[in-house]
Image (cartoon, rainbow, N blue to C red; front, side, top):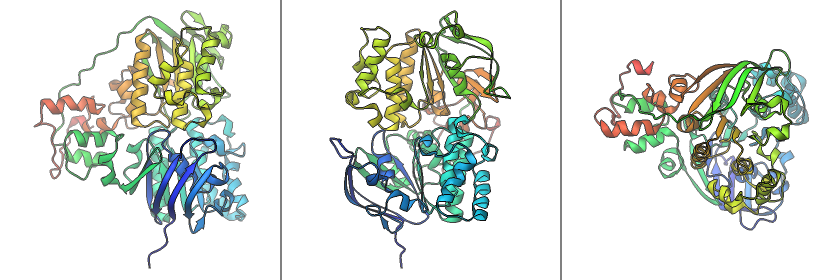
Length: 553
């Protein structure tokens, strides 16, 4: 006898209150016990909406017009509210801060188990196991407010896992994690799936991180719905990871390689000629940091940072979670004041200027864009910025069109999806054209198409003699769009150079193409001319194992 599916969605349609169109239309889908399903689609397509149907948040919390049925673990969500589903369904939202209810990490993990009536012995065992599983044992006594964005994301995932739910629902679970942390978290989820049979449904734009262990893909786009196994669905997707792009370019026969190991076995030999890159022309020094030191306590978060930023540059700021990236950006904006050293903006020391004066030179888009969106419509947000700068020449609709948001000009910013909100906050700051633009995790929640638009926007922005600094964990984005990389570790600036010098050969921050080919190859664009020029050196060889050479090491 076949077991009942863990998730059974029958003719589901949903429209948010006051919305003009359905967010989901006539969706039917099943997920079986122990399966792993990946939900994909562009920003605003309905992925988060679908996930919120799985624990009853829709319709019980959001209201709106709900049609069809969603049955999860034998319970119809029309009758079962989120509190009734809490023991069996663990959920991690796009914004983990929204689900924290206590101040301390350990208390946050224990809180859910206390409400579910676990005995003290079980709670202690589950607590210790989960802290170790997610690698956050060192955070157990920390105040949640002192954690970095990535650390908070890991704590939120731990809080969802600690009660060992039968179904785990994850919305962009690695969006704020450095590559190593993302690997560790997903390895933990995969282990719970394989060892305990936990059913997993996750929405994720970084497909390179999750395709290896996903079994089926659900594609949602503006209410429409498709579901197939991974190998069947991948050729039909517009946004795919570099490995899949490579397979398409090389006309490899199925199956499409999903891991670096599988791709390397398809490559007959490695291109040996160097990649030609034209460095961007630097302009004047716009930013100078001298001996910058800052600490929230002991030890210091940043120590003796020295660097210069030039007009015409896109600079990427990378480093593991908690390395000081966001702190450095806040020091550049004047939101924090250095304990030692100084920040010079166009020749003026920022610590001697009021914050509102620094804001005319530096625009800062934080990790959580909702914190700077406060007007009734998106158009109002941009016009507010222009009024504050006494700028009558700016065109709000022009920048909204450039960032793919023109259709949302009259919408409330907080009604947008997570990825759309990221771009809305960028538009609200960039419309005033500050000479220095700081972006903290701007690719969070963005699919590949929107990332490319963001990268093109950054290039056009600096072409006018401005400077952009982007703190990010997205090494594929960095390799394609940055002129220069700064790497932080334990509060120190440990590397400063072009992408090929910093990313190539890195165990943590290398790109997929660099792991396949080695050398200074970083992107599919680096491989394409080599493949065209010398097909005999880069060709499909599904059966012949690849012989490593020095470039692999």
